[in-house]
Image (cartoon, rainbow, N blue to C red; front, side, top):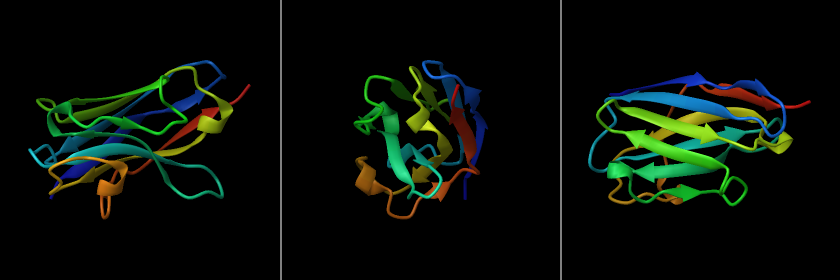
Length: 125
């Protein structure tokens, strides 16, 4: 079984940028779906962005479209989320996720994913 280890995150003022990374050792294969989810206090975990193997099927939630960029380095088994123009409503715990045995990738593909340990992102003045 693989392992998802996250790094990055932190605190930033509105309009700032942060980068999240996820070392996805053992998960990179031809039928894997990888993504980033976030959970704000008192709210359910929601999908932010997803990407399929070979960097296909990239999807973003409407709330982050144009501000966040998800990327996958298959050789380094590394998943990244670049977050720009951050807003206070982006605050939350961010998790990387991996769902195997998926020939294509959408938010609905994450039926029983493996999760990273989570990293906090706080956007405030």
